[in-house]
Length: 398
Image (cartoon, rainbow, N blue to C red; front, side, top):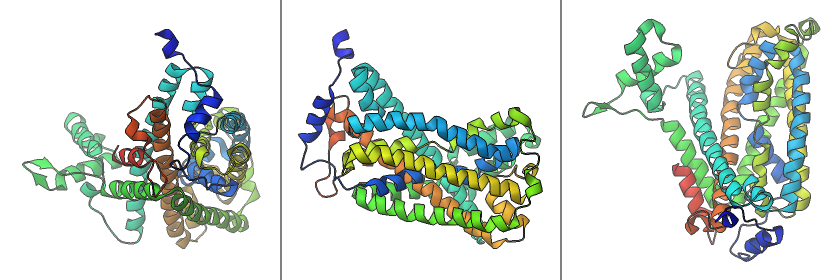
């Protein structure tokens, strides 16, 4: 029994199992540029438009150096992933690496941990996308009822908080949830509350992932180009409004303040590992995956450092405790129209991150199924689109 739990697969075995499906497997179409765009899509999500402001507020301009140190730490993880991905060019990511190194039991645990990670991430990102989308529409004078743009849990939590602590204890988000509960249509006395924007974007992204890796990559590339262009516009446009005195003192809250931003800064780098799940769709995974991971980290680090220096140079760091710092600093200097552009870019950034995470999860399931740890149906490859079709559909539903 213990032998079965800890049995390992050799690299040759795994590659043999993958090659048995040659002709019915995934399409090998991705190069370095494609992988880099997917990596940037996953990393540069909403973080650069929101959490980077809080990090700057806590640590001051010195947070720019924290991004460099954090990227340096992430490089070691990236190199480990790159080594594994080039040695075992299979779509299972850490699940497959664990199967080779530690055996089936550890692989099973890590596989389900990855599935849970991507499932939770997809849900949170979809809800976040809905909030940004609703906020963007309101900026253009369009309104979606609260009961149509909120997860039911938020509304019920607000009602419970109201009943227990009274109206004085409600935050703005709680009040929004209470409005959704009170104004929602009812069937048999039960309020109908659901997050329509989150459901729609999840359906559209799932459909895109289903119809092909080429289509997904092209969509990702377009979204990455748009958001990087806007970020560069913010950087180069903001340079003209920088006041060097705002950088003094460079670490106003000392080392404690800088280290208080570690969580937000690390969060800004999450996602680069997701491109390892596309290993079977790479033209040359041994060469391209290591390069792509390092390039992703380098590009994103430069963008993060530049954005942090521009933000803290345009306004004093004490002003940056806001949810939309990029829009705020341009309003501060009188460029209100940039706020609308940044709002649209935030939605695009989150969409691209959702696309990559939605792309990764079914490939984990597919690989686990191929190894006999999941129902074989999850390993089904669409004959036309060359994608893990059944696993993709289940991912969208979950």
